[in-house]
Amino acid sequence: MNNLDKFDIAILSELQTDARLTNAELAQRVGLSAAPCWRRVRALEEAGYILGYRAEIDRHKIGLGVLAFVRLDAERSTGGLTRAMEEAIRQIPEVVSCHYISGTGTFELQVVARDLDSFSQFAREVLLNLPNVKDMHTSFSLGEVKAGGALPLAHLVR
Image (cartoon, rainbow, N blue to C red):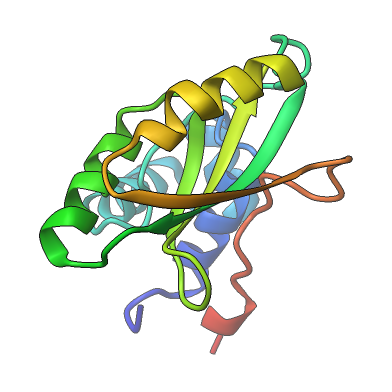
């Protein structure tokens, strides 16, 4: 983090806003010529600052109207059992995000489904049958206020 300069930060900011910018457009926006801009982007990728590029898809338009927040409690929190749970969760496409959490619960998942009936069936057949699951608590999104937001970068500016 210490070796990011104003151009690197500007590149990260611009790419978070629009990752489809051509190198020429990106270079113009951050005040560099094309070749140095391209080298910096590659260096940011290689250093792991940029993890990838993907399209943000409207889940409603593809028929995924339900977004559920699911807290899974583990029966036991031993290393092997927790790793088995993590690996099983990683294999489930309907789970779009998973965090190992502090406080009550072990994992917090974001799960998408077509409708409430589909989610209910998925929860009974998949989530409750994951290894080491003791309990499950679910809340449903009633509407998105903010999603897919860019990470704040102001703290990187010297």
